[in-house]
Length: 378
Image 1 (cartoon, rainbow, N blue to C red):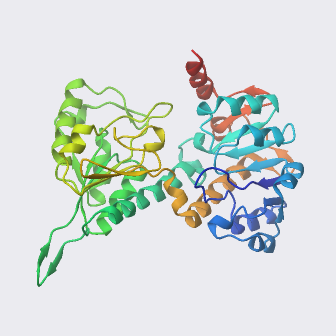
Image 2 (image 1 turned 135 degrees about the horizontal axis):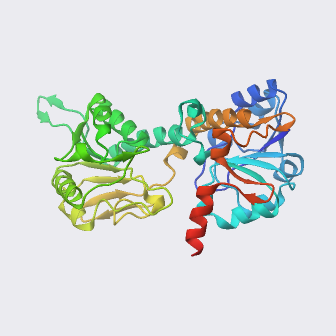
């Protein structure tokens, strides 16, 4: 089994799928590791660092010619898939329902593909959970971006010239990214308020020092699999009114809401932006999926109605050293769960394997992806 690590080609991507320390671990298990030359340079990992731990650094063409298992951070392109030997194995973030042309290429080349974004969120797969590891870093970086754009400091400061009141931060969503944003903003000294329709997140928010915004009836929201299921129109209206009131006082707003397989929900309307204080900042972490703010612009920072809107996509890539280290641990742990040096273990009914296996032997075997792709076609 020869592992090929490809250099990322996505715009502004600085991460790499394997770091030298993880390559060293795989070499001890007798895997051959072929790294495309300069694949790790943007993450501060040199070709020499890979070679010192037993990897070979090769041209892109040579990696495609010799590897049988391919690793990336981002989804493979059609061109990359068509260059793989037929029957190869590949692992990366895929979000396969968004790239039907790549799925088709997998099927044509009989590629066995696994998606890092489809790893089941269960306790024994925590070390493989790249979604969480990258969201953690994104939540941290979102606060720093917002603080840098804000024309005031975060903490309370008493000086001879007067007292500076702490900044007020409002966070939409208390998932992994949101919780890390809370912790980071609190460490910087801000007053933090958080809104989430899932009442069980209240305890987590408060444990980090945030104030949980809620309205009567939140305790009746039905939660299935960690997501709110049946939320009444009346509850949503009262929740919206509360948020509209609190956003007027916020210095920094961070939004994190995503819906799998769908466009991100609009949480901040243009009227809400107009109501905010001049000089306030919004960091829209969902901008790549359409954005939680109606005025966000992908990969741009814009000024609208006196408010700065930051639409920076791929926040983990702004922390490439740590992001690559965490991702390399995630993907190598999954890899060792799926294969041996001889090839696939073939345990296709096992929960983790079944959960992240997208295509195999020319067939689309991931039911959720198939459902979403069929919905797009219709």
